[in-house]
Amino acid sequence: MSDSTLCLDFGNTRKKAALFNASGNIIQLTDLEGEDSLAHVQQLVEVHRPQYSILSSVIHHDEAFDTYLTTSTSFHRLSHQTQLPFTTPVSKPSTIGSDRLALAAAAVHYFPGKNNLVIGLGSCITYNFINKYHQFLGGGISPGKNMRFRAMHEYTAKLPITEALFNPPLIGYDTVTNLQSGVMHGMAAEIDGIIDQYATKYRNFNVVLTGGDTPYFATQLKNGIFADFNFLFKGLYALSLLNNKGL
Image 1 (cartoon, one colour):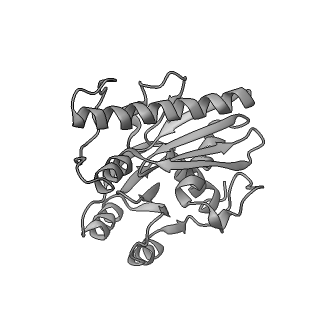
Image 2: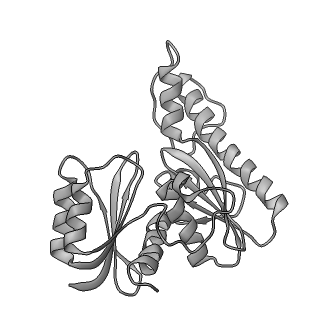
C-alpha cells in the first residue's frame, strides 16, 4: 500500500477521481462514467493501492462505494462532522454542500490569510467567500450554463436546446447564437459583477475560478483571477491530510 490519496468528487453531472502522491501532487485524473463507476474505483484502488481516500458527494450515491473504500483504505466521507480548517459563523456545516466545504478548505490551505472568493462553475455557479480570518461566510448560488440553456428550451414553446460556444458573438445573428450570446456573455457579466462587489468591500482579495466550465470563462472575465480546474480536488486532499492523517 502506497502513501497516496484517492480523492472522489460525485457531482450532479459527473463522478470524478484524482490520485495524489505523497508529495501532494496529482498524478492521475479519471472520469467515473456509467454504471461501472464502482468497478472503476475498485480498479484504481487495486492498481495504485492508495492508503487514504476521501469522498465528496452531493448526490444520493450507492453506499457500496463507502463500504468498499472503508475496507480497502483509510476512508473519510466529507460531511458536517468533518474536521474543517475554517469556521462557519453564519451557517451550520450540515446545511453546506460538501463541494463547497472542499472549495473553502482549498482556499484556506493554498491562500491562507486572504479574503478568498472561490467561484465554482458546474451544474450551478457557487460563490464561496472565506475571509482572511478563515471564516466561511457563505456567498451565492445561481444556475450554470447548461441549466440556463435547458430552462429556456423547456419553459418556452419554440426555443431550441443548444450548447455552449467558446467566444460566442455579442450580437447573435440567429436564434441559436442569440441563446449562446445571452447565456455565455450573461454569465461572464454576472461573474464580473459579483467579483466587483466583493472587491469594493474587501482588501487583500483573491479570486479562484474552478469547475468543469472554467475553460469557457477563464479568459473572458475582465477581473484578475486564478483559474484552477482541480481546486476542489486540492481541497479534498487538504481535508484528507487533516482528517485521515491528522496533519
